[in-house]
Image 1 (cartoon, rainbow, N blue to C red):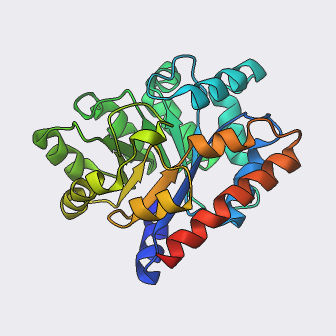
Image 2 (image 1 turned 120 degrees about the horizontal axis):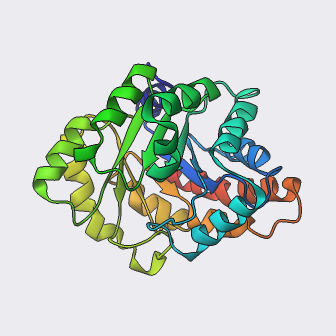
Length: 268
């Protein structure tokens, strides 16, 4: 059983929802990434999504776009990101790590080579925003050979035929984008509109369903988790640590931000 599957099984057994924070690798500094990852786990993260910096992050809003630009300027390419995961694994062998990003840095290496490198580093899953399921066959085969989950995305505009495909192919978890737009636009978040869609997806999906985009605080996390197996919080966390003066401050801010969300999910 993979680390992702084991984590969701444990959450189901305890009646809890998954809390999945997203941070951009290499921001607010290269040295802060691993301390922030560890602080998030200490604060109650169940799975970590680590953003791979990319020069054209089309699905991301300004907050994550700017964090990606800063990280790239510091040298946080794919090789560095995998090294960061290795460093995290030196003290944490159980928390699942999912890389979230875009196809180009993976395609350059080739699906098989990338999958082998990612698994060797300790990565459990990969979410590629611009890889449609209809074109994912080569990547899925390479990832399957290494036990690497290909995380898929669904949205409010995904049609019924594609929903059926996504639910049948889902691995690790199915990521539901709670509104049609880019990350961080919290003014567009409406948990009541997402509820019916989330319930439908959970009934059909072979994997747990988590909701993301627009979740900024404990109340939003608890509301979205009501009809999901977990929630992802990204832009608000990235903004919270963006100007941290040093790795210690970044880690403290990350933990302080996440702890109330963990408490809210467990209380709901």
